[in-house]
Image (cartoon, rainbow, N blue to C red; front, side):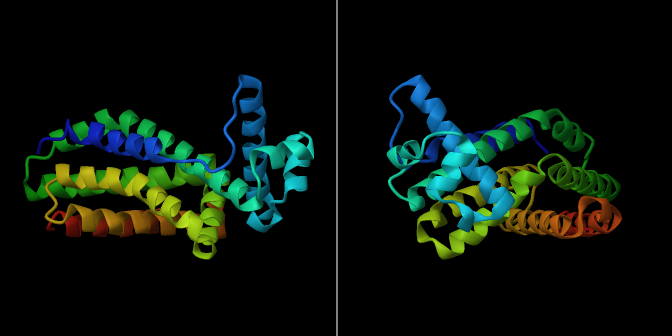
Length: 237
């Protein structure tokens, strides 16, 4: 198994998505105005996390951002532009964070694959290590990035109702999925794209369940068992 090129490719895939994000609202021409525009987008995201997308209104965002109402209408001519750009920034930041994640775990993944000589015992060990890594990822998301996950759920639901967000929703899903695809290529999966779709869906469902039940009620052992079974199937065990 030749892993060293897989993790950089995973990080690059996230960077590619990062570079593809486009904004709809008025662009800032000066540093000070960019800071104000940024404050408006951050305020809109806080409202979405706290109160939901439908609570995003120019006046509410201006109050939250502590800027004049005229500032929100200057940068965003309507609420759709403001919501779209808020989620564009969300996708952009998610891509940057995922690129950093893949870069950060490169040595860990290289070590995992370096120990795998193709034997059944080694493949079982790899399946367990990957499953444990995925569980830790979900736990970290729920404990350290709780608001991010709430924003994600709000974003994905809004994309069902707002056609303008569907391209962003697709790009957002690709952020994790493409990285996992590169990983499955590295471990020799016969269907890396399909395996990545399934693992991405499993992780997102676990995150959603964790939001519903609370991280303190997270059944990590059940999660580990599910992920180990899945990885055993991928590795032909």
